[in-house]
Length: 135
Image 1 (cartoon, rainbow, N blue to C red):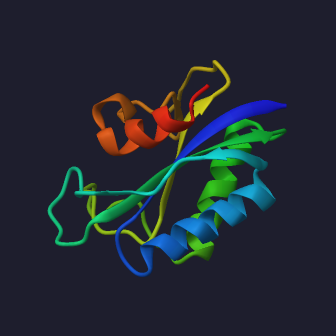
Image 2 (cartoon, rainbow, N blue to C red):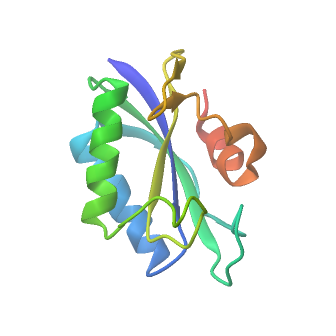
């Protein structure tokens, strides 16, 4: 079994409900959610929007590989209404965003997958929920 930490964010629609639904999907398709952070309301990062984010982090036990998790995350995001990661390479409002933050002690640096998440240390909205559940 592997330990994976995921970051979640939503800033449009019913943000709290969407985060809860994403966590349910993670629990059923990626692995048992063993810890979850509080919900944090935060300002958008990297773009301007009047819509505040709800952010959270979860820790799960999984048998999936990092690439299988990435595929599952993309399917969860799509099922919840996410249509694109960026618009013309820029961040924008989103119904849901799920990122792999950490996977065991693994380091991956590929164009489609980077673990640990390369910008997480610069983002309080990631680090606060993550620090709450790290052991």
